[in-house]
Amino acid sequence: MMRLMTNAEISAAFTMIGKILELQNENPFRVRAYERAALTIASLPRELSDIYDEGGMKALRAIGGIGPDLGSKIEEMVKTGELKYLKELRKKIPEGLFAVMQIEGMGPKKTKMVWEKLKVKNVADLEKVAKAGKLAKLPKWGELSEKKVLQGIETRKSMGDRVPLTAALPLAELLVEKLKATKLCGQVAIAGSMRRRAETIGDIDILATSTKPAKVMEAFCALGEVKRVLSKGPTKSSVNLHAGMQADLRVVDENVFGAALHYFTGSKGHNVHLRGMGVKAGITISEYGVYKGTAEKKGKLLASKTEEDVYASLKLPYIAPELREDRGEIDAARAGTLPKLIEERDIKGDLHLHTDFSDGGADAVTMAKAAYAKGLEYIAITDHGSGMGMVRGLKENNLAQYLKMIGKARKAVPSLKILAGVEVDIQPDGSLYLPDKILKELDWVVASVHSQFKQSPEETTARLIRAIENPFVHAIGHPTGRLIGQRVGIEFSVEQVFAAAKKRSVAMEINASPPRLDLRDIHCKRAKEMGVMMTMGSDAHAPEELDMRFGVMQARRGWVEKGDVMNTKSWKDFEKWLRAPSPIGRRLG
Image (cartoon, rainbow, N blue to C red; front, side, top):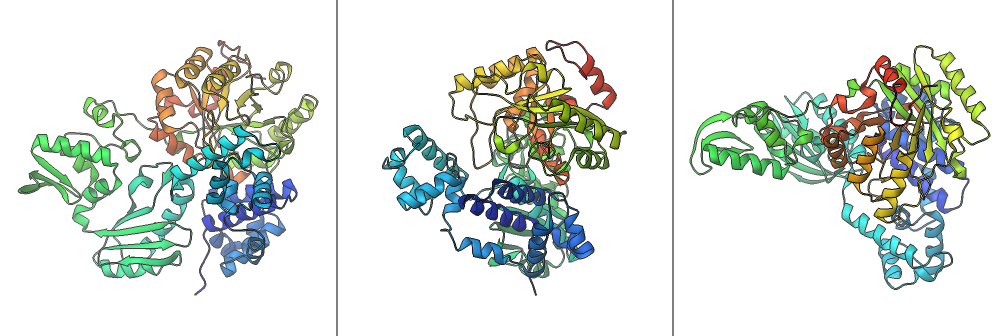
């Protein structure tokens, strides 16, 4: 039986092609097409194999950014489980160079240079030549570049074998759906750090109930996504997946599912804290239930079927999985002050998206129609205002053209409120790429750092504060500029920057784009504590990327509630806020 490739694997294949083409100095727009397609595919709510089965090539071509060439490659992967074009490309460069390109400070040009001049073929080689001082001697490198590479290597090491949540969760959900489809399971749920929505995942933990656990194990180990069975027992099995992750399945009795789900969700700190409370109350908490007495001398079973029962045994309300990090959630539960966490349905608008006017893959009308189809009341089109040549976008001399494009989208989708916005680069000194005379003509201005990530914390703090003090800036986009597992981003004084943002009524963005999830969860929590406004934006570059799902997950880990995020407001209330006098002279064009 032919193995079906998952969206995660197809996305990874396109990402790999893009990297190889970069290494070969291919046309940057061709490289960008593969990168955008990879991101789009990773964000799809349905498997490409199902889309193709229902509608063939026509259905694939209907996906934003998928033209005939990319569509035929997806078709090949869906039908055969492989891609010959990628196989041929991979033969042309050492496998280890893909990981080298992922190191912060390394790109395709520098990777090609160290490969050709220093015979670097993998990260270990790169670390060796960097520590020997050989990188600093290369043309246009120097000691600072060499130091940056060594820091990047350490960042990658800190990730270990962990995978971003955004890549792992769709795969885990697919496994859950396939287990449910066997009709052998009563309940099936994701557990572990993935259920807590941690931004990186070590492996996939799944918990199920069944009266036929042995058959469930057989079905699990025979799934097409499984590459190798590591172990198979009567109630637990571990497998390696083709996507490169490990997945573990446990089958427990229906009567202890709640206790087991709570235990295997964690975190360790949260569970230890609760067990300590239990000891003081004369009860024992484990994956088998909550019992009166000690672990050595158990008495009456008090709770086991549901997680709510587990918490109730300690006189606590249910605590959402995203909060279970032992960061004060248990004390808040005791005090009755747990937050009512934001939900996807609370989002009424998208305040950060791009079109093909800059580096997007669809025109403004297409993006607007897609946003309206998702039930949004309003959007802000925020094409780049940047000096980077590849992204094109808003310049001093094309404002009229840009506003005309947005006007066309407004006429095409009259029921959707569309703000004329921009994502303008914050330059190294904190000034903005576009002058105020351009910014003042726009409805919504997001200012973001896209370069010079290695300034000192003092420099970046001053840089962000200067941008915040610009009278036309509404929000700071993806404030740290990090890319999960690839780039640490900038360091700054959170206290000082957030205090400036609060004073000027400037919002801090929770960027929902899978590679970013920026603000971090701890920063979301601090912004909430300081009373700083937050916004959420998809940073979509194609219709399929108009998705706040992972941004909401990140916000929930940061204790964020509906009222903490500006674009949970209805259009009527959001427009009222835009028109209201404020420290930065907010206006709506």
